Image (tube, rainbow, N blue to C red):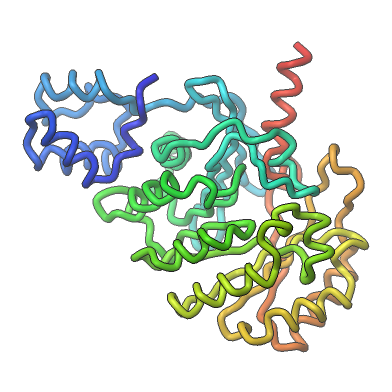
Amino acid sequence: MKKSIYGLTIEQLTEWLLGQGQKKFRAAQIWDWLYKKRVTSFADMKNINKDLLELLDANFAIQTLEQSIKQESADGTIKFLFKMQDGNLIETVLMKFHYGYSVCVTTQVGCNIGCSFCASGLLKKNRDLDAGEIVEQIMKVQFHLDAKGLDERVSHIVVMGIGEPFDNYNNLMSFLRVINDQKGLSIGARHITVSTSGLTHKIREFAEEDFQINLAVSLHAPNNELRSRIMKINKAFPIEKLMEAIDYYLESKNRRITFEYIMLHDVNDHVEEAQQLAKLLADKRHLSYVNLIPYNPVDEHDQYRRSKPEAIKAFYETLKKKGINCGVRHEQGTDIDAACGQLRSKQIKKEKVN
């Protein structure tokens, strides 16, 4: 299987070209064809000589993902199921907001984090995606917008799809550099958010990176007993260690961090937990935002239900009274397989039955 050319930063492409006896300026030309003109074949790169086109085609692929399923929601949200060259399936989601088009990308085939409420972990991690496979998800969505004749571009990225992004750190970093590069997709760092379940050593490493990309932490519980019960990763990285890493990040970046908090009926949605959460974040409240997320039910996790509206309201009001910046996530795509990993899991089961 050929590697996706989208996985190379412009520096890596330049180095490869020089190693092949090619001119340095060819890298900028190739990137222009890939990201500005958005060709889908090397043969379409009109100002590249035949020998180099053959060299590129022999070593790389532009298209490695095949659309398997596309689900469209009444609100305009679209969930894509892509099949990769090795037959594995991944999900990518396009969402439209008042500020533009946002894409949620997947970084791993399956997930080993083991959150007990999540559809992504129903199937254990098979492998990491390489940087090109992550970039290509955005390109596929952009091709979809182009095909509709929309003079619109993907402007925002959230790395919150299947998998733990920081468990695929090197490929994640290459992906971020490609999409942030002005010669590439030129998506601003402040329009990109990476989510982690709390790998503390990687949060510290991320704090040392030289760009201002947003960080979100999937917290989901304000104490170790409850968080360990619903997120097994907390046993390896308990809340105390997590908060130390977050403090380091905040000191290094001086940028606001988002805490994701999924609302599970009669599990983590009591006023008591809201008070504990407010206390936990009290010394960080000037650089913290809590995103309260209504739960999307998953058939295989039928022990969990969505919090009642009045419980979410009481939780929100408790945080606000304690001076914690917070909001309730606006739901999108609820009439399709909304939970992350749900469509992929259903399709794999269907294929096994057939």
